[in-house]
Amino acid sequence: MNPQTSQSSAHKAWFISVNGQNLGPFTEEDMRAKLKTGEITSTTFIWCEGMANWIPLGQSPFGASMPPQMFNYQSPTTYATPAEVDCYGGFWIRVLAYIIDGCLLAIPHAVFKNQGDIWGWLIFFLYKGVLESALEGSPGKLVLGLRLVREDYYPTQISQTLLRAPVLMLSGLCFGIGLFVIGGDRRKQGWHDRVAKTVVVKKEFLEKVGGQRK
Image (cartoon, rainbow, N blue to C red; front, side, top):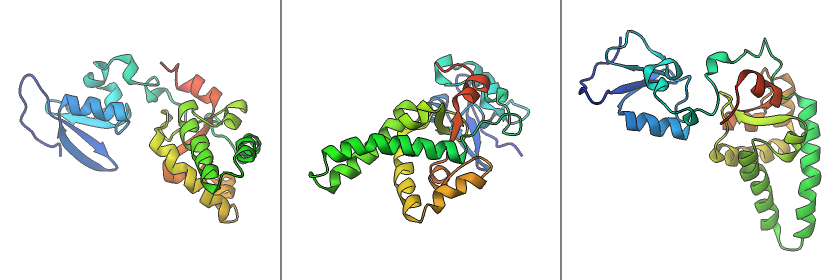
């Protein structure tokens, strides 16, 4: 049953459906803020009084009123499914990306090796946390045509990559189990990807089904 709310002629009260829960009411300003931070996307189902059914934000009048730059990709309704497109970066190509990244990381580690362990940690988090968020992937991934994105194929937020980095390290310390699971996972996610809610996809997939980024 749809939630009921009073609303003025100037402002509508919006509700969103997240993880099976209906949340709200929210003002249009609230909705814009949530969209900007990535808390909701064009695939999030929304509803307000006067609408017959819940529909994805991207297909709603509210979504249509948003400036194009609010959306990093075209409507996700154009996305192909994993069954239609081999979109995810597989185990072996990601191993190669890790090798490339390891070689690059060895350079600053060698320079600062006498400065204490704190520099090694700082370099790792800058590389895997900050750089991967800014570039949509590490240099190793970029060279091999891979991109790190959210599970809905939108760009990651730095909070996700900073969370992903220590779990990646933990995965390696656990005899690599958290990395080996990539090979058998449908979306090729390791422990660090699952925790941070990210996926590694091929650049061609984003260009083909995600549209041109703004």
